[in-house]
Amino acid sequence: MNNKKTSARPYTALRAIAAGLVASACTLAGSFNTAQAQNTWPTKPIRVVVPFGPGSFTDTAARTVGAELSKQLGQTVVVENKGGAGSTLGTDVVAKSAPDGYTFLITDNSFAVSAALYKKLPYQPQSIVQVSLLAEGPAVLVGRPNLPTKTLKETIAYAQANPGKMTFGSGGQGSSAHLAMEAFLMQNKAQMVHIPFKGIAAAMIDVAADRVDIAIGSAGSTSGYINDKRILGLAVSGEKRNPKIPNVPTFAEAGFPNYKMMYRFGMMAPAGTSPAIMARMQKEIAIAVASPKVQSVFGSAGVIPVSSTSAAYAEQVKSEIQMWSDVIARAKISTQ
Image (cartoon, rainbow, N blue to C red; front, side, top):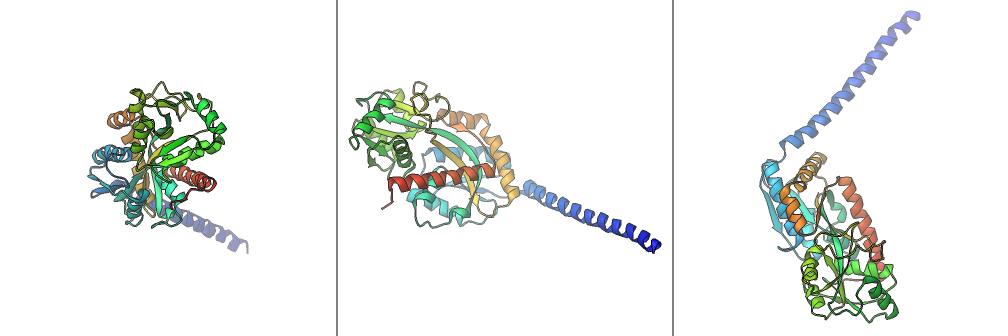
């Protein structure tokens, strides 16, 4: 009996060693496959869809970063503009593309806004996955040149005392500028009349012409007006003042530290895209946004180049969808 027990031990030990070797081999194979995907991709041109027309900062970001990625990856990056329906047309194209690492989406907060706003979309938001952030830009609250109140505190105090007497412009019903303004007004228990325009540029024209009281836009859409003293810069989001408009106080400096709205731009992909390809693209984006060219172009627009992990970006989008859903419900906003 002792001999049998003794002889069983080496056999048991051998089985354990063999199992360990198999597990190690599987791990090595998985690592090899990941490394192989990262090293062999891409082998043909990459398509980047922008769900807006030419001229937007999202388009500029896609073309600037795309040029750097093309050099880094050794393949052409083709940017396609597919605007319409609040960015959902272009997003739908990517959602229904093959998850092979050759089709990507570069978009902004509109992805989260659409997911919160529209009861029916041509795609499921879950059919798109986040790859990496590219940039963050501040929201800038501006007022018409002859606004009787000259600071944001005075403006909100007047709006609180005179509900419905002031107006604010946006780039359209349900646009990010519309929701950003509604969120700020709700935070401060103030009411203003919403005036929707076909794009934030049109809204800024009417603010500068003294026809609309205030509006929220990006640094790119407001800095020229502010620096030329054609509109009043009331506040800018972010932890510090924006170098494009250094005389405009932050929301915290203006007395509203809880307002954290930021415009975010990032790359997404069809769900099912290889984690190895996602990881490679994240790495390349981090290199691209640190390049002098991207730093210069983004800086001139008052936007900060950033990068992130897929998980961090996904969590940010999830948080924004919840936030905008709450704003939409409380403000009773619809697309009808």
